[in-house]
Length: 156
Image (cartoon, rainbow, N blue to C red):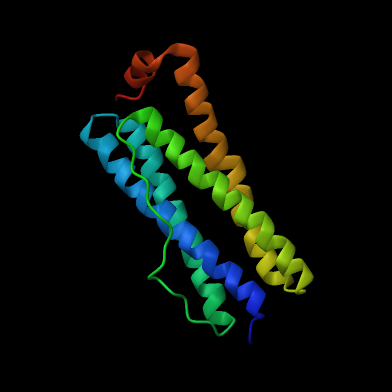
């Protein structure tokens, strides 16, 4: 089934974002692990796995729509130097993906590609309700209890 160009263009943009998010979460999770922040490591490693699943869903849909995914132009990965910066960078990625997903859902609706829209709606729910919300909570906790107390709570 041949996909519409506008939809395929959006799917590629999303793939570029999801791959970058995956790699950024990968780098951050390993830094957390190295620093002994095992709770952060476990959560961010889980997020990395979910971003991989998101990328997989996009790749499968692109292939179904007879498009060849391009893996050479993923978005920039921004690895932070401190826990707050890492969390902020991850939240910025999620906000960017969120906006792109919303834009892409509208394009799918206009193109009458309802199956792709449904796939993207699932990714949007994951992005907003799981990833971004959790990151906002962590940054709020740092503000409320202080960085030292927050970091102590992330050790196992």
